[in-house]
Image (tube, rainbow, N blue to C red; front, side, top):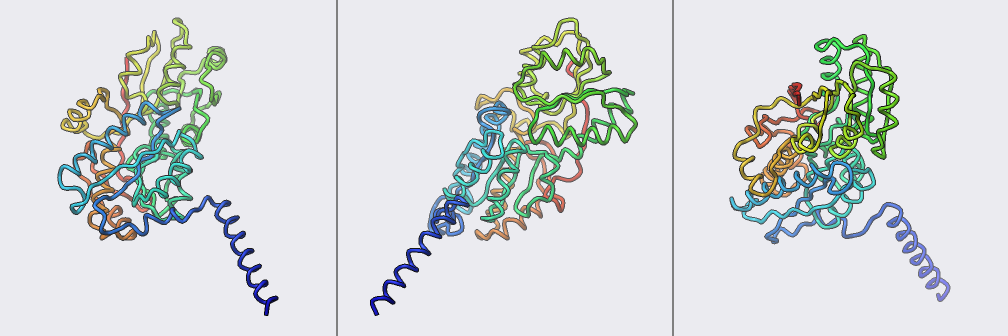
Length: 373
C-alpha cells in the first residue's frame, strides 16, 4: 500500500514538473486566460494598444497613441460600451517582431478583449501567434506588409496592404514619369523588404530596370549615396521611417540632384521643416481619401499633435471600429469578429469609408502622388 502511495506521489510530481516546462516553453501563465473570463459585473472593458513608441516609427507611434486615447475619451463621454468604461492598456511594440509578440502577451495577460496595433509590420507579424492562440480580435492602424493579408481570422487592418502601394508606385514611375532606371534604398525590416519586393517585381514586369538595391539598418547613408552618385539612376525609390528619412537627406550634398520617391511616411511637414532638400525633387504615394476629418484634426491638435498624417487618424478609426464591434457582441469573440467583418465605417477621422475584404484588408484603395517641391 505504501509503495502505491509513493508511486502516485511520484506521478503527481512528474506531471507538475512537465506542466512547468510546458508553461515556460510557450510563455504561458493562467493569467493569460483572463480575457476569456472577463467579469461581466465589472464596469470596465479593457482593450490594448500596440505601437512603436521607441525606435523606428516612434514619431508616428506616439501621435497615433494620442489619436487612440482621443477615441477612447469620446466613447466614454458618450456612455462607454453598454454603460461600461472603456480602458486603453498601452504597450510599446518597438517596431520589432519580438517587441510585438511580447506586447501582445502582456496585454492578453492583463485581460484585454481586443487589440489595436501594431504600427510596424514586424510588430504585427510578431503578434499573430499570440492573437491566434488566445483568439483576440485585432485591428492594425498602420501595418502594410503583404505577408499580413489573410494571415489570421482575428487580424484586420485599416491601412492598405503594400500590394497596392508598390504596384501603384511602379506604374506611376514607369508610365507617368517615363523613368527606366531606378535604385532602391530600403529599411532592412519587414515593411521595407516586403514593399521593396512588390515594387521591384511590378517595375520589372513593366519593363523597368533596377540598377541597385541598398538595405540599411544603422542610418549611415554616406556610403550608399556615394555608390548611387556613380550609378546615376533616374530615380531613387526610398523606403524608410521619419528618422531615417531625415538622416538620409542630411547626408546628401548640396550638388545632388535626385528624383526621390517615397511613401506615406513623407506626408509629414515636420520632416521637411527640418530639411533643406536642395535641388532634389521629392514625391511620394499616399492613400487618396478625402480630407481628414476637420473635427478630428481640431481635437487632436488640442492634444498637441499639430501635424496629422497617415496612421494617426487610422488609430482613432480602429479604436472606434473595435469598440463598436465589442458593443454589439455580448462579449462573444466570434460575434466581435463577425461584426468587424461586417463593418461599414463611414466618414471617420481618416476620411475614407472602411470595409474589409476576405483577407482582413480594407477594400477599394485609391492612391495618389504628392510632391514636396
